Amino acid sequence: MQLKSFDEVRTLDLTENKNWYAWIDLMPPPPNNLSLVGEIMVANPGVKAILTPRVPQGINPTILMLELILVQRTGFWPQMMTWVEARYDKVVADNPYKFIIVYSNETAIVEVPVDEIH
Image (cartoon, rainbow, N blue to C red; front, side, top):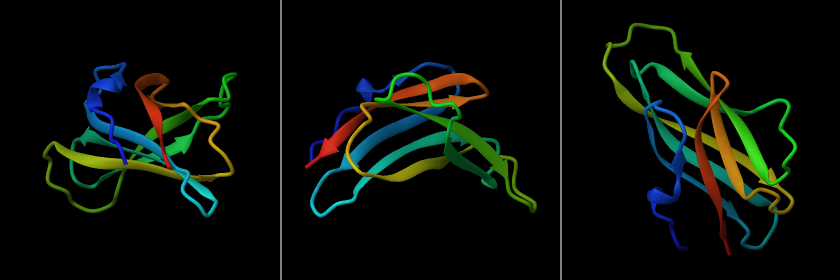
């Protein structure tokens, strides 16, 4: 498996995020698994980062567009800036995606190329 350097990931906004990587596992047997991981800076460890598909998706079928949603879990959490993982996994029949774009509040924050793992 060859990993790309994070220099190839293009950050499009000043939202604090890092370490994005997207890949699709094309190894037999099917189905193929598409995955995206990254880290988001949040205000406390009780915040959960959720990635969901945007609706509508857009006109380019090779780009998957996801929406980043930050959810504050109940309870008392220390107010300290911390990194939390954002992860998205999807089973796909083939590899239609070349890029994944993550949006937050209607703004694209990162564009990540999808690596194929054979």
